[in-house]
Amino acid sequence: MLHTRIAQVMCKRPSGAQYTEHLQFIRDNQNSYNFDTISSSYDCDMKAISYEEYGPPLKVLSFEEKPKPSIGDDELLIAVEAASVNPADWHVVRGDPFIARLAFGLRAPKKKIPGADIAGVVEETGANVTDYKKGDAIYGDVFDSGLGAFAHYVSTTEKHVQPKPANLSFIEAAAVPLAATTALQGLRDHGEIKPDDTVLIIGASGGVGTFAVQLAKEFGAEVTGVCSTQNLELVTSLGADHAIDYTQENFTDHTDRYDLVFHLGGIHTLADYRKVLKPKGRLVLAGGESKGHIIGPVGRIIKAAFLSPFVSQKLTSFTAKHKNKDLAYLTELIEAGKLKPIVSKTYALQDTPEAIAAVEEGHIVGKVAIAIS
Ligand SMILES: NC(=O)c1ccc[n+]([C@@H]2O[C@H](COP(=O)([O-])OP(=O)(O)OC[C@H]3O[C@@H](n4cnc5c(N)ncnc54)[C@H](OP(=O)(O)O)[C@@H]3O)[C@@H](O)[C@H]2O)c1
Image (cartoon, rainbow, N blue to C red):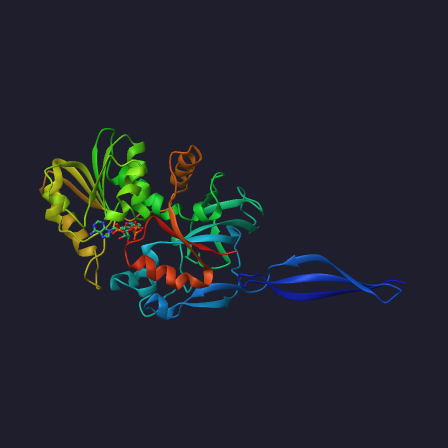
């Protein structure tokens, strides 16, 4: 006679995520035991990188067990396979510049799990979700749907994700959304890039810059990238017609004048940019760090906004916004082999604080990714 018993066993993935296995034990006449796994569910807590107070990433971030997010009718639960790090992550973790705390929480961070870029698999869908089903591979940017990328699971809406490009791994896909969208919106929407424009990209070897070089070439521009010595070859291999080594020469000493300057790295004055712009040229400030911790680069941005109406050049800044139609366009370019992410290093989820600290140094080549599953 056979005796059966069902048992639940808590297990751990190598990455640390817990899950429940439902086992059926069968004992036969000879008293020998066999068991089968009848199902497993990841319905318990998850591991995530979280913080309770602003500060240096290596000090305030910890690898902890957190409740798995619940979803509303319009949301998807995503099992995150990979994430990537952006400079925005260290700004969010440090609450720096201080002015950013107006959005992220004045005294302490409102959202406890940072991270914007994700690639993963749909685990569960809310009642009103129509475009995705369990098992679909997706990628996207959860920055303005509550952050939370550095975790085994995240919830977001259909508006924040797209099907993952078929020719990219999860790691590569996670490197795309925020950086490539910034490059696209900076060049196309704010820089009004046109074929045959001469374009100077300052910070051409970083997360946004490596996409910007490829996109500017795709728009038919003549591209000059500014980067350090070791990245000259990368920048030209991505299609730049010329590369300037900022450790050896200052682009402001050149006599070349540009239709469009896209600023992503280094600290320069508005006068420096204006000097290298043609009389009707356009300056787009996407970022670039600053020495101040109160308003950060916002000072330079405000100056540009005040000055722009009084000069022939257009001086502008912007904050990239996730738009699914932009991510769909980027997917098309990626699948057509016209755009590729550069991932220079991948960290495990528990090492995310080190990854964010490395990005904060400001000399990352392409993107840094986080392997989560
Ligand atoms: N406005 C927005 O919505 C938005 C969105 C995304 C990012 N951002 C901002 O845009 C900037 C770039 O982002 P990212 O993700 O590309 O950052 P990143 O990956 O850290 O890249 C920064 C790049 O700047 C270069 N750099 C450093 N010092 C430089 C200098 N003196 N001259 C020229 N280049 C220099 C570095 O190149 P080397 O290694 O060769 O030094 C590095 O490749 C950041 O300030 C970020 O906060 C803004």
